[in-house]
Amino acid sequence: MRDNMTGDQVAETDREPCWRGRKIGLAPVDVDDAELIHSWRSDPVAAHEIGFWPRSLSALRERVERDRDDQDRDDFLVLLSDGTPIGHIALVDQDIADGTAEVHLLLDSHYRGQGYGTDALDALVDLAFGELPMHRAQAVTHTANTAALTVLAKAGFVQEGVRRSACLHRGRRYDLAVLSLLRDEWEALARPKSWDI
Image (cartoon, rainbow, N blue to C red; front, side):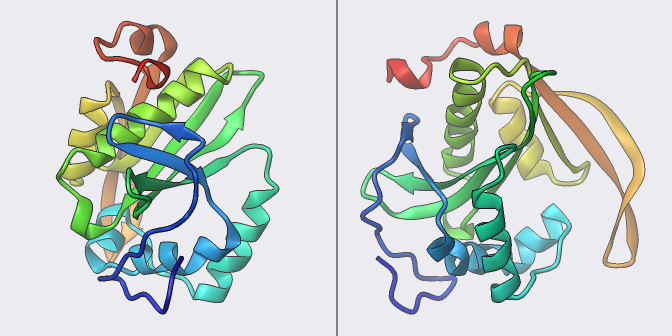
C-alpha cells in the first residue's frame, strides 16, 4: 500500500513473498511498483555508483510492464519481514541452454550497509541454482563501487576480470569488474539455503 511516497518514505505492502532469505523476502515486481523503484533509482549516490541516470517515471513504468512478460528475467521487490519494500533485485539475461544469468541489485539508501543486500543476493542465487538450471550467475559493477563489491564477495561472488574503460559516466571512463558465482561454488557455501531457513 503506497500513498504519495517520496524517496525518504517507504510504506508497508500487503504483498506475500514468494521466496525468502534470512531477513528478507522476495515478491514479484508489479507495474504499480514503478514509482517506488523510480525513487530508488533517482538517488544520486545509487545513480553514481551504478552508473545510470534516472529515466522518467512513465518510461520506467513502460519498461516494468514490458519486462513482466519477458521470460528471460525475473524481477523482485526486496521486502522486510513486516512487508516494507527496501529494494529491487533481478535475475536477467537468463540463458537456460547455457545456464547463465546476470544479477542486478538496488537498495533504498536507508537500508544499505545492514546486511540486506547480501541476504537478498543469497536468496536470489538460491533461486537461480536451486530452482532454475543455472550454472553461472554474473554481476558487473564499477571497480570503484566498493559497497557493491563487498556485498558480492560476501555472497560468494569471485572477481574474474576487469573490462577496462568500459563505461562512460559523468564525463569519466570507468573500469567494470566482472564477478561470478558458479554452481559448485554455491553448493560449497557454508550457509543455509533459502529452503532451510
